[in-house]
Amino acid sequence: MSLVHKLKSLDMQWKILIAIVLGLTLGLTLNQTVGPNVQEGPFFILKTLFQYGGDIFIRLLRMTIIPLVFASIFMSIVNLGNIRKLKRIGSVTVVYYLTTTALAVLVGMLLVNWIHPGRGIDPAAIEAMQIESVVPESVAAQGVGERSSLLIILDQLVDMIPKNPIQAMAKGNILQLIFYTIFFALIAATLGKEVEPVVRVIEGIDRIMHKFILVIMKIAPYCIFFLVTVLIMDLGFSVLGALGKYALTVLLGLIIHAGITLPILVLVFGKYNPIKLFKAVLPAVLTAWSTASSAATLPITMDCIEKKAGVDRKIGTFVLPLGATVNMDGTALYESVAVIFIAELLGFDLTIGTQMIIFVTATLAAIGAAAIPSAGLVTMGIVLTAAGLPLEGIGLILAIDRILDQFRTAVNVWGDSTAAVVVGRIEGAITELKQD
Image (tube, rainbow, N blue to C red):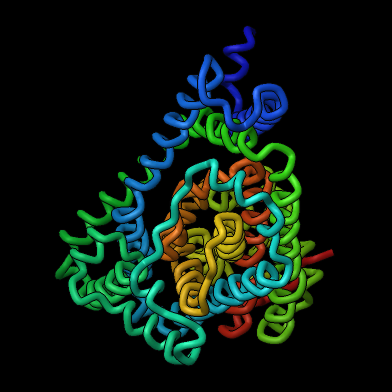
């Protein structure tokens, strides 16, 4: 088999990994040989073409944000469908998922504000990349010293309610769009069969957008190669230290959430030994780590929860598929850390109001994350847009996104498993414990 055929047969995650390694290698080589500020000649042309290639990828991602947020969140809520019939099971599951996601974001934000991985890079190198940030007027007008933190937060909460939802979509106001979509979907869920035609249309949009993402991801390895090459060519070795600190911050946050927060919830509310639960679902966690896909892991997770953890099948078949759609603890944590990291690199001074926006948006945007590899790159754009940061900032973290994707997906699946046990205990549906 030729090298070309071998490359074509590789899974997407390996193609992306190869693209990142090649981009790092070529970027460092060009940084050391021709320098970051090349202005003419063949290498300038090459760099310009790579920048255009990366810009195409960013534009395609930007194009998906508004319809993806609306359709994904709408269908996530409407698919609960019979939440009135499910009553406590549905409400307990949703509350648990929102709580754990919010806790994950909080852990990530506390860590990144403590470690500050984005500090220490030469500002001139960042400026040379010509990445501009546009601060929303509502955020720029706020000052911590001028108004109390409570008023700033209240302003942000009130501002989530759109005066005109169409205008919110046109301006890309993600928080307002999320609020409107949730409200719209809840009303639709109460009407049931009366609005089935509308639901089918939005379901079609949702499927189209998920397919859209899959199509975009086909060119992702090439565009990621372009973005990483230009990034490393501009910043050289200096960025590697910052990326290392960023990666450690994310991993530390994931460890704290997966190893402390979730086990406490399992122990207190699930009355279940978290170590035994982890052993029971370890095959699912390892599969999630290797595939970076919650959806691909779902059958294994359901089997482990029912046969090894002793949770009743009716609980697992509701809680786990819902979790694979809306419960993205690891992704939400990663996005909160990444956005603040990017803001620090760009010299963006985050106010309390802006960080509140990041907290709320990262928590809610995780609902719209598709359960496929690297879908977090799309929802990352949602959080960046809400915080007034450029989508081009995604290029600053692509070099190590793939490996972090594996760890955050594993945490996502572990979070789904803990939810099944907690809900199962509350419903009295844990009938036996089959762990060794």
